[in-house]
Length: 226
Image (cartoon, rainbow, N blue to C red; front, side):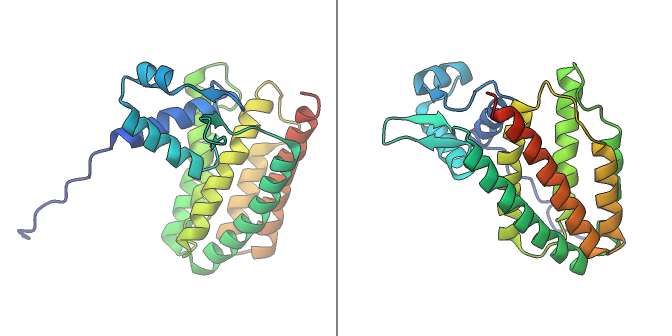
């Protein structure tokens, strides 16, 4: 029996907790695009000092969800048709590359994780009136897309993909919240997963591209009327 001490997970820092809570508020649209973030109000609302709050906002700025405007303070990053177009194009290119790398390097265990996250996603109810159920779908959806590229041996690429996915999801969750999907999204996820584990690279990248671009077009249609 090994006498090596058991590693103790590092405790979650206060700023990390704040990042998660602020990210959720931004992604859900509770803090709408362009909203000025009053530090005193946020400090009071979260019961924290300015130091961890500023650290959290800096991290969200790096993720493109918060912007520092000419030293006048922080705002939730505004939205625009041009910004969305750029996000969609970058997602198609970078996630396509990441999936190619994952297909080349992924093992059987990775295939199992892809199918497991697909199953978990299929068990969640999208568009539910229940906040808890909808949040469960969002978590499962993000986990599925992350697992598709988890075998990509390029950490920076995975990080870029995660950032772009969050930025894209913010648009979707705000602008498509009240719109029913005009397509079979679960079927798209299933087709994507099977193309990946069957190592059909061309099909996988095509399905991914169409999946991302369809969502982008739907958001653009609503955004143009806002």
